[in-house]
Image (cartoon, rainbow, N blue to C red; front, side, top):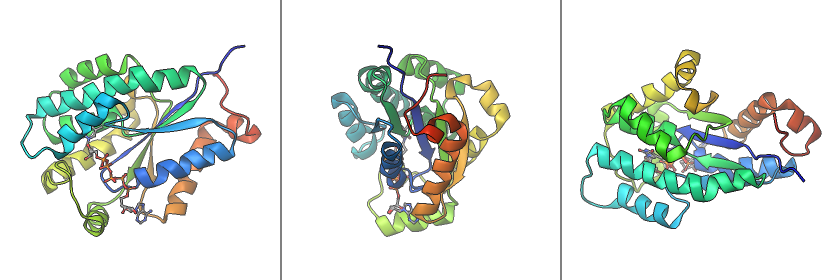
Length: 227
Ligand code: T5A
């Protein structure tokens, strides 16, 4: 029996844009359409990845930008090889809360690392795995700050300052440009969705985007088809 490869759907965007709120809702929506999927997040998802997550987000000492980038990519290499690729091969789709666009946004645009060097290191981590679709949730800086303040408990990157986050915002906006996507085939198709609505509104936009991307899948509700 031929097993159809699952699809990799990535959620991206700034802190508090709503990724972790929407990811389980999207997982449920896929299940309601008969699609077997699993939810993963970066950094993390493996034993090594969880240790790296603690180190990169919560230790009190400073890391150099290169160390920070390499740690995110080391967690990614573990997750891609040990978890994501096996799931996709077995026909299970993966919803991934952050992937390498985060490294491009935070470590390249935010911290100022060289884009080409980071892309090369990232290629080692991803082993050529291209997302089938990336959804970038967008949210204004003011709305983001209000959500972060309501929630409290900021990690190291959330505390990085307004100018840093403005560069990250600009990067996520740039990723939506078709010309940028044409120059970055490793990223696959990327769409932006306004994260400012209610949780239901945002989910509806996301599911409409998936239905638009794969009408044959959701028309018959029978699982993803190989293209
Ligand atoms: N990072 C990560 C890098 O620098 N480089 C990398 O390569 C990678 C992979 C990860 C950090 O690491 C950085 C980026 C991050 O700074 P994290 O905690 O795993 O940190 O991820 P974050 O994305 O930062 O998690 P957040 O929780 O901050 O953001 P989310 O998941 O986008 O937001 P969410 O869903 O948790 O919502 C935040 C708050 O808003 C509310 C929620 O209830 C919550 O309180 N909310 C809404 N309120 C009103 N209306 C809605 N529609 C709402 N949706 C959510």
